[in-house]
Amino acid sequence: MLSGENSKQRLSELCRKLRGGTSVRQFVLRVGVSQATWSAWENQTGNLGSDTEAKLVAFIGSSLDQFRKFLTGEITLEQYLRSPKLEQELSPTQDMSLAKLQAWIRTLPLTEVVSIAITCLETIKESINQLPENDNSKFQLFYNLLSASKRPSNSQIVKMAGKLGIETEDLMKLCDRLFPKEGKNC
Image (cartoon, rainbow, N blue to C red; front, side, top):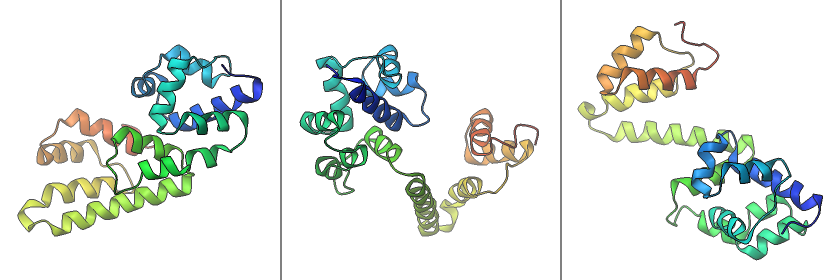
């Protein structure tokens, strides 16, 4: 189905952009193709069957025509990912699945992703401030964790987990993800 190395290279670029930092194993579950197929696309060794092409196009939310224009080089990756159909589907006024939102965020430049993250934190803070005083303590605690500049100590994490009503191990894993350079030695 793919004609020429340029089409394979463009498909590879698209696949890497969509997947971002998510593992292939996790990502393919959302798209509905096998790990081998996705890896072959990323490594420029695979072809598109009509079934896998349809699944990828459906996941992205574009038209088959736009997808093929991208593969042939008629439009750039940025133009393809910002096509009117995708923009309409990703409009905040439209219903969108979390998977589509995550896929769309992965297509954005880092500066825009950071801007979205900041907006999310600001929205969390505003929502917390609108809660009655006795209802916002858990949310405030969680917000403080997300916006902290360094990893809390293990004893602080144990106390937070108790106050938040979540498993200590889960909160430890979250802290390890939020503060990867600091490790577990706190």
